[in-house]
Image (tube, rainbow, N blue to C red):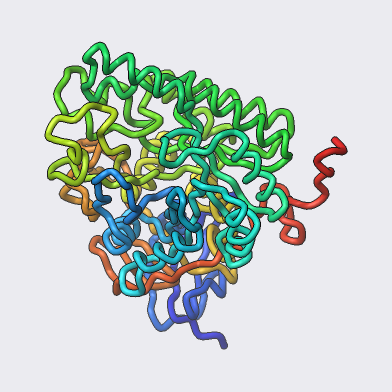
Length: 486
């Protein structure tokens, strides 16, 4: 008779398609049995009829990433992965960022050094950020790195140190098409932002709240439409990251209605923060919520909720970008009261992502538990080549699991969180749920306190993406028409 290392009793298990009551048998870090009245395990946990979901996959986080402007990210792989585990996330995918003029291979190797072997509490993979697609990168480095398990990369349409022009984006999209890789795009119009910023600074409008004025919704809409058009020209799947506005969501739905493989990601800041979060006066407090795209208005929040419910969005990520508010290396890296254009861009959120969506989405019946699992785990696992090892409760999958305390009133404070940032933008929010327990490969890493040994997290090599509707034999990338025969 099979012996389980661990049995989770009386689980109300949730996958992207089903909810069912079962015991979950785990051996050697993997789920081996789903059934009723399983034999005793070496260890046992009673879920007591509570919801049990797959461990979250946060596929858009920034940890210990070089910035180049004097600011320093507060979270490395140790503090960032600890915070993730405490919030129900068991897989992280941060970014190895190529420096312009530098090697992509060197960026990946540097990021492995930063990750170390004694830091991560949960498993992790890497995206790449391509800032300089030279012939050597496109013809040599990138194809080899994709083969080695780095099958996704991000392109910027804004930020001078990071952005590519349309011709360069087309070159990278063509390579992604050939190599069956997944491309993520940060869609904002760089020149429009630059022009508006100049006008605002010339008028003396430098406070954090003017960050929103420098990046209105149409700037995101235009860049998203252009990204979709470039992808349509090359006939390649893309994912638009951190979508904030209804106009952009309309662009994605239009593309999906045409049958294009265009996917969308959004983040908690576009559900729970607004333009007013950047401040109603000229004090610096609003810098805590500077991120790009900026938080919008109540109408945009409702549009994002609709997109989460109706399937427009495939992924719900945190875009965790941890900069401290106090001190000289975070939001104030350019002085005590810098202009909005000099403030480190980004907010923390890796620990609060799952609870925010479960509490305000599932508990308020805006989305189903199954949709929650799709958005926080399953779709990311598929799009980034980690499925079926990650992202579901299934025999053979890693035993990455979250047991939920629902109808538990929790007031979010920074003191209760485990990141290395000195604030949370969700301070004072009252939630109706929080993870009671997080398991990573069958080991408890959160049960009200962080558990496990730093360094237990494993690096994950990613397969090619598995596009929704495809099977594992072709993963959705075969049978493309030749570029010039369409």
